[in-house]
Image 1 (cartoon, one colour):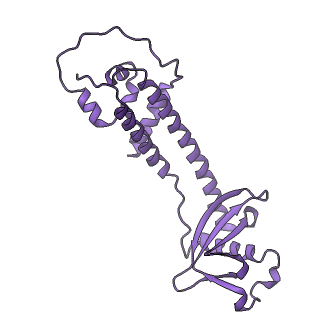
Image 2 (cartoon, rainbow, N blue to C red):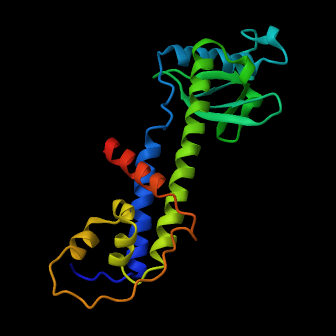
Image 3 (tube, rainbow, N blue to C red):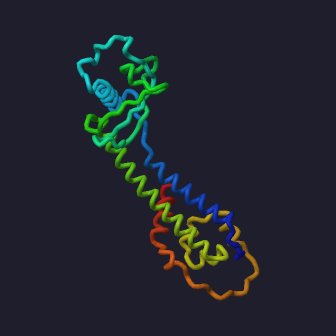
Length: 222
């Protein structure tokens, strides 16, 4: 087995691998856009127009053209009654058509429409709830991978070589790029055994079961 010295390049490559794994895991929880001609789209359009005339609903459909502005895209922003934003979504108008909203809603080059969560109905409510659930799941996954990175990198830094680190805690092999593992497994003349250093696993608060579980989940997804 060849000796693979711990270097900053190795550390950087392990960090990059962990973050790539995290990115792939988080991709599962990405929001889908609101597609035209769907129930969510129809409900979002209704919510936008309701919000646009919130202060004077009797004016909806009764404003002259000169008091309206046409736009091909609206930035839909959902917030609660304490004005905390829950989510944002871009909504595109159907081809060869435009949204029409009161002129005062256009801010320079864009149109933002704030909709309260309790103004959402039907399919839009379901879509917003799904967004909230995904956001919570994303946060959990992000926290898992941040902790994995902290533990793996902290542990590697306590060793002079990748060999010693993997010998003491084989689970971290799951986070090491293949080129380093291939190098480590190359056949070489046996080295003189050095005195074993004290383990840093307990000192760093490393959860070996969690490290293995996160990596195995990543492989299942791949």
